[in-house]
Length: 245
Figure 1 (cartoon, rainbow, N blue to C red):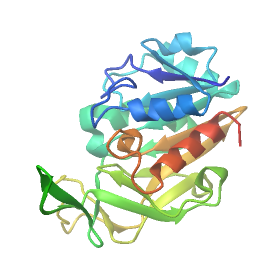
Figure 2: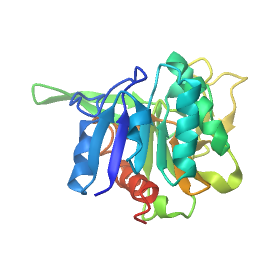
Figure 3: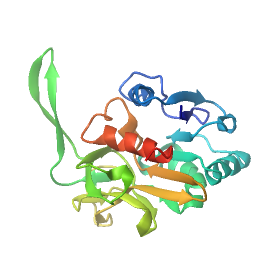
Figure 4: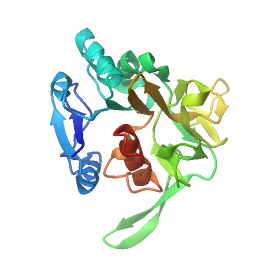
């Protein structure tokens, strides 16, 4: 049985047992249904027997010995999943970059916003439909690098995520051209804010191990994991990191 450790020792935004909309309990349920053993840990150093270490939206810095352990964990064949958030919220981009730059991946301090074909959700109250709400921060990804992780995907979504920088051969997904990098987080494009296709996920093969970075942690959340092909994307990532595909 493949073992997955979820880091909860760095003031992470939510956890694998939380069944609220911002929690990750569905992610845990989906993993267990596929035969994975899922364990949360306050000390990632104790995750040594694990096949995959997952770090989601940390708000506390990693100590030097923890960073060294994580790099060695990947070197020796472990899988690492890093999930960020928008605008360097709580310093999460800086914290994740202390890990990810060893694998030539960088989390940016922006927030991706869509300007066209904006996602909408119906608003209901006591069973009555009251209208629709627009979510310009809900960005579509439908450009995929050919890779086992992106197999059979047609459209994934991310909500309030950041962009990534990496080598061209390490990109997994991009946004459409109708996206801009919202530096001031007001969901309105300013003259100094660039638009185009932005990298939203990336991978690396490092020594014997594998790494995937996502600019948005809400792909794994209870509220959004079932949107579009998010669930399939996430489960493909786990299969690849565990070397099942």
